[in-house]
Image (cartoon, rainbow, N blue to C red):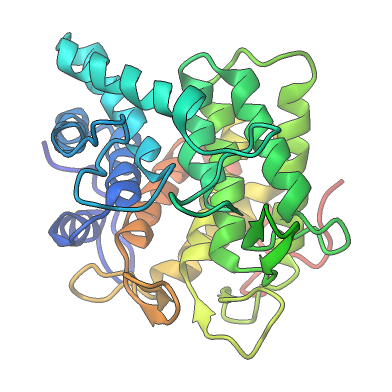
Length: 342
């Protein structure tokens, strides 16, 4: 099956997808690629990506982690595609793999006394990235209470109430932030993870959906304050000396467009989300690579990454979910809105 046509000035959806599939991927990158395939309606591709994640499943249940990764939670990002594969194929191999991944998350993965998961094996650090890796899967598989528990645990440790932004890492033993920087991609993981979870699950405990939606909006609003004239953001949001980074625009755009499509953000956010995606589209080169993003494998300098490729595709899929009247609403030009709706 060919992906839907969705050309941009810099490259087509097909080129971006081809570039994504050509990249080496670690477990979470395989998971986000699966999310892009599902959002594009490429079910056969999603099953193939799920199959590879199951083939490389660690004996402890972590999907895609058999190659020696030290991630405690990253493989869970593969769970959504594996769940889909189990449903459409009826193959018990997929169902058993998903059960093992969920058992790892719910029971065996290292965590703090309040249940907040640690991001890496051999470390007792809480990372913003974990919100995206685990919250959507927990929500989609009927564990909404555990999903919101993870959001709250990460929020309590990493969210700066003064700025509205997330820090990158917290050391649970030291009881302090070890990476207090407001990394753009880290904030993107949080809002994209909450947005995806709200889309995948309709059954939340009383008041929780509004709580999660309100928190995602708070972080989105805080991030938008740092959008520049080029429509993009610094790699560290409140440090203009860091490089201009394109993937956070895609991640925020995906979250905003999803929020409008699903009814928990007002319609002006659709226009702002469209503008963010358009700004990132200008970074897509002739080979379909989204350039100038926090680059793999170390994510400390500008480069390319499979997660940026996937979020390009997910953001465009979210844009197509909008009614035509919302897709162009609230457009304000390259610098974005000066006043956010309340």
